[in-house]
Length: 129
Ligand code: C2G
Image 1: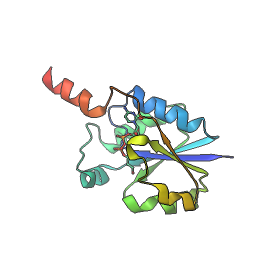
Image 2: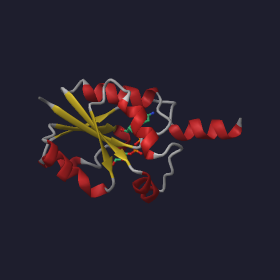
Image 3: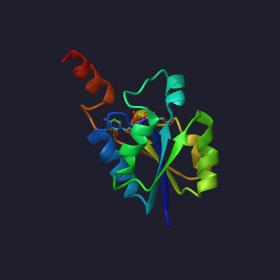
Image 4: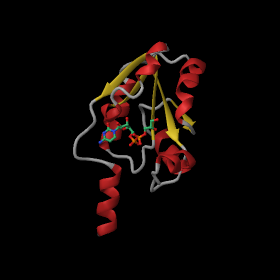
């Protein structure tokens, strides 16, 4: 079984996220999403609109997602990949090059981000209405 992993906040889920998850899942047979915890996001200087439990519940309903684990630190990726027997790490190309060190343990794939959609734009629009 070819196992894929990706990491992210997945707040205010939109088609950009769905296209990322679908393409990631299509690279193998099983997709694990490491979902940023609220505490980890605070460290990223990000506060999601929805708390972790709600973002997790929404992701659980997505057909491309087979497993969800918490992302609580920048340093956990290598240990996740080894522990879970991951073949390929996938993330959007806004991170291009940032995770090449993982090539020592698995394939690393940066996928094209979907243009003209982001959680922050949705929030800004929501706050204006
Ligand atoms: N994404 C995308 N197109 C968009 C928006 C997001 O392809 N229009 C992708 C991102 O590239 C990422 C995933 O969807 O691969 C989740 O995006 P975020 O929730 O914004 O994740 P991020 O805050 O980048 O956290 O350790 C890595 C971090 O946790 C990634």
